[in-house]
Length: 198
Ligand code: SF4
Ligand code: SF4
Image 1 (tube, rainbow, N blue to C red):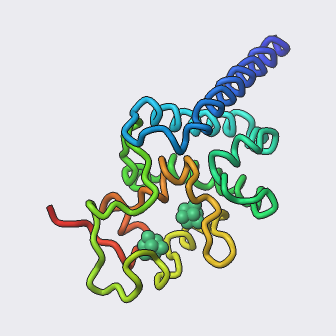
Image 2 (cartoon, rainbow, N blue to C red):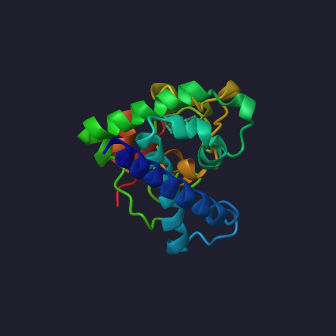
């Protein structure tokens, strides 16, 4: 009975690892060439990250250490291995999962569809700059990255450099898409962006 359970669990993990590896082989090389409007590619990119999350949960985070290159490719492809605070990342993923499970307001802030295209920068068709903003118009320098610090994000590197920039996580899930609605602006108390009035 006990052995059967362990066997099934190991099979389950093997299938997940195999699927994540196959998706990595498809998704990662095509990152720069797949058309932004290619809904099929967008679904695969998100599935890749979902699989990594499921593996993380199923192994208590051990998968992140065992398959670190797959996780790094999804979360921080431009950072060097030595720059990444691995244990803080491990803890941070638990915090984000806990927040997502227990905080309805947080879940409701990210209503995107699985086919939505990636975004690398704030979408100016959705937001405008607040009249009270004193900093430059093109980036967030004068803000000192309130949202990253409020999150205590382990990918917030030295000199305010984002170690997760250009990753699948960044483009498809959170930061590259921020802000897309008023709830996100309010949650992070963003001093710069305001939603456009349509
Ligand atoms: S809180 Fe707003 S202005 Fe500040 S870093 Fe984040 S997005 Fe930029
Ligand atoms: S933009 Fe900020 S919150 Fe997002 S991954 Fe980079 S450092 Fe972390």
